[in-house]
Image 1: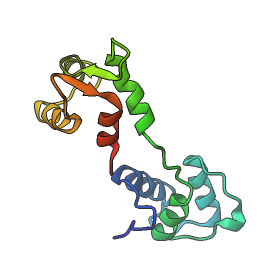
Image 2 (image 1 turned 90 degrees about the vertical axis):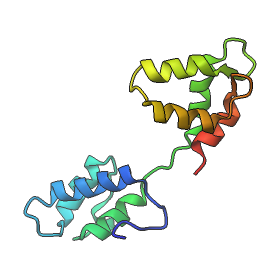
Image 3 (image 1 turned 30 degrees about the horizontal axis):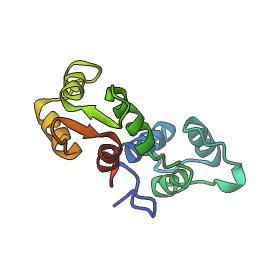
Image 4 (image 1 turned 45 degrees about the horizontal axis):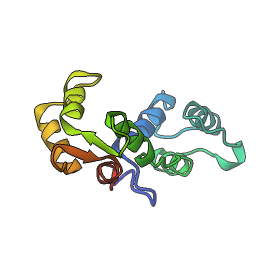
Length: 140
């Protein structure tokens, strides 16, 4: 696998790094010069000194960039989002209201996605424990 490394990047992250490399490899040489590599890294938000860079191929570019990707724990933010449906302040949210929001607001979920969501959150009597649901939804 071209992008395999110790950190195990997501498909989106791999795609972003690949697209970035290709953007800065405008002549399709399969290599970036030190200057191109520095510009590509800056475009990703990584300001690395030139002595950490060099002429790189795509594999080396992905390896370098992946060392600087910050892994964000999404569970606290998801818990907070689920708690928006906790009208009693008890840590439990109404599943029917959550489903309505997922089907009608923002990026709407498909019926299959709603079923998957419902299965993952393991509602009890129409209520979802926000912390447990966030843990299950973010578990890798």
